[in-house]
Image (tube, rainbow, N blue to C red; front, side, top):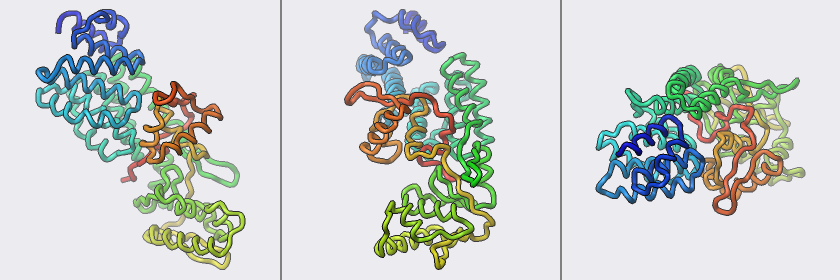
Length: 406
């Protein structure tokens, strides 16, 4: 690396993008192309950035494996920024192995951070946690330390381990201040605000009560049977019973919990669960089938008793039933939670993260756009969706595939 490219790299590390770009703007050698690609990514020109980084990787070739691997890591980071979720997970494992083989620990850490972040956004938290455990930030740049601690903080928040999340966030804030990079400092500030925003609601007769994350964690660890409308499951006695993939069963459970300690009529269940105004005997039969499935799933924590009028929920060994609702009463709340990170998402990436169909996501986005909650940027295959403003609620509990409490 000559003096100009070395100076450019130092300026990029310090966040001085325009001055760095001016040093290599007219050069076409692979190191300069790579630095130009990084600079363009910092300016938000992601398409041009990916082109430059690909050209740099080809220029280095197989005889310079470390430099080529660094370009691949940079490409993966740009792909993550535009929410091309599959690409980083395809190209990073080989690049990570190359960097580790040649003892380039700082860039290997960057590669692992990107992989963990991809898994986190896709809701594959077990895999993200595995990479987080392998992070070694000793004697690494402050910017990488801040990114690693932010990742650890978000993983802790997803499992509602509030104290470890606060500790990791504090370490991230210290490292971000040391690095002096405004974008990192803004990200730590944004995560700090998560702790004070409403994370869930307790529906009550005299008005809903907002809950912060600490209150949600305390509720889920209490001696209550909690029907969690954010993560769509049941928490009781330290057990987590997921019902996210069984929407009919969850709706029945939520309605039984809302009526507790009273029963709820069969007609009311059919009307609200099956969306039918005039039920007949076939619908009653279907309700009996679904009720049998729900009884089997929750038999360790509760029973469902038939009454002359309908059904009643009876928790086992627990004195109370609590129904917890999302902070927003909207089917698109989870979609807004993903968009609330401020990044531009494609419909395919949103569908992949939510585990649903792309057409379903497209219909929801059109409805949100009509209500002024999201904006579309670009056309056709390059179209991306962004939130019109950051959400005024905590999104952690609305994101997919949340780890059960431990």
